[in-house]
Image (cartoon, rainbow, N blue to C red):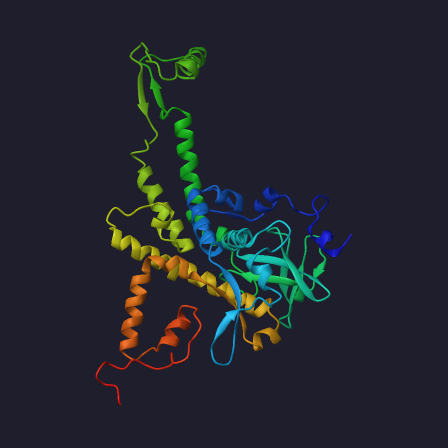
Length: 388
């Protein structure tokens, strides 16, 4: 059995069961809910926030480029990582699926680990680890030690570790821990509403009668009430005698401001993941078509771009060799596809910058990932100002 088979085989002591792994990240909240990764994904706002980020990262082409001394760049199809990152990462995942999975792990657990599978020193695939199967420790000399679920050390040069936001520098922070209060309250509100509707939206209360009841009468009345308000009789008229009265003692959904609380929790969780509510279907009634377009643009700039930069830097630092990096190889997301709606605005901006002599045509083409052309280094000269 190869080292790859040992690392990624299922069964035995290897914690490959996704459900058990996801439930391993537990953080108790003040709402009384234990927030696990699995339960957090059950909150639609959490799932949608991660999904909109994951799809935004996965759908954008990720390629390896090579830049020469003159600033020209071209797709580096000769790079060992090009076909792996752009086309197929391993036997079962496409590039889209791999990056989608990466963001889900990074977004909730704060870390993503993949094994760099190499044959005779050449990379052939990237094999992602299940969450919770890798631990990392920083020694006194600042070196990092990675171990799998068997306790076996993984060579540092054979693991790709991408970190989310980090406090301890060597390991990312778990969103389920630091956003547990917002997520826990959302779970609590959801469970409360489920129980209320399971009971036919009937509130609890007190039945009172005018005469005193002995223990036998109390038991009979309790059993009679439960029989007549449950099952097939739940929504039928309830008739009592002896001047019996019902006094509600629980709050209704209106009294508890359930709708308002649920809407606020959507915004709170979106804030934790830095996703605008409109991106997950929570529309702002005051928004217009023009403002919505700017929100979508802001989503690309402020939500997705940091993730692009994080992954690009990690590829450049941890996948490409120093020799490749020195030779001008680098990873790049091409987000222009997401900016098509703002192409007119970009053209207007470039034209103004060109007229101001702030950019020449080749510099503008470089910003759009286009190659330069002869004569494109000349700056704008107004008509009538040319010298003969």
